[in-house]
Image (cartoon, rainbow, N blue to C red):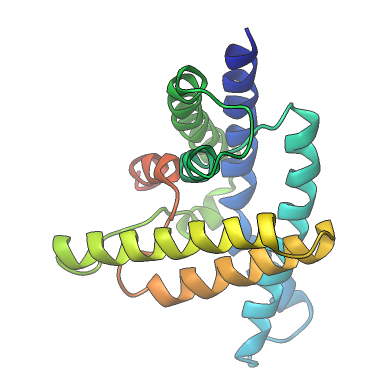
Length: 199
């Protein structure tokens, strides 16, 4: 029963994360434009990092409220491999499809509510190099992200604010590093939304 509850929590949590995170580009653009900082190179990076920090911090509490819900199968698997948490193979077998279904649900939801003039800002990871290079880049970036998450959560600061800031900084850094390869997702469940967002 615990595994089913965890899977249900993951599905709901992933719908919410994909819905919100799909709007980070729009929110970053609106913030930078509202503050009149379009000409500053660092402004979008700082605005995006601050957005990710805010939502990671809020979603950490929300995930705990939902019984330890997560939106990333890679994170679930890595914490299981590290012996952290109460997952079993059965719960992981239920959680992974729930997270994938949640990402599809979040993508469909954002497509319904995003105003037409901003739909061009939606998009998932897209292959911008040959298949082998893109796969290698995504694998390396996912490894680095997973490793960073494990270090930050297990060995890093105990402060939830600092953890969220470090996670946001690592995320923006790795997404920027991989943007010329795949527009990296570093989350297998998130990849499924790119096909929906392409329409």
